[in-house]
Image (cartoon, rainbow, N blue to C red; front, side, top):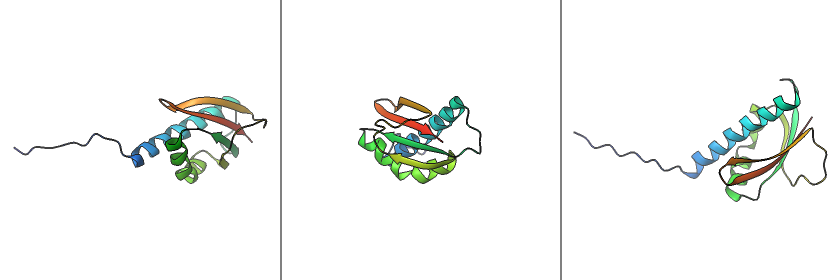
Length: 103
């Protein structure tokens, strides 16, 4: 019999992809919540103090924009800007993000 060893550790690339997928799901939920249509192009401004989350989302920014019909996916503190919807969420345990959505 041959022994099989499974490596169950998640590397940074897999973790980053997971954060990006969760962000895409979250953006789609936000779009539905405010009643955007599929063809509506939106703008996301986001901020997180978590370095690994920020790095992953910036690396996956083009994919996130394409999959969620965004014209902009910008990391920047939300400040006093007016958004159609603004939320704070945990993309993963301990990985907090502030998100603003507008057309």
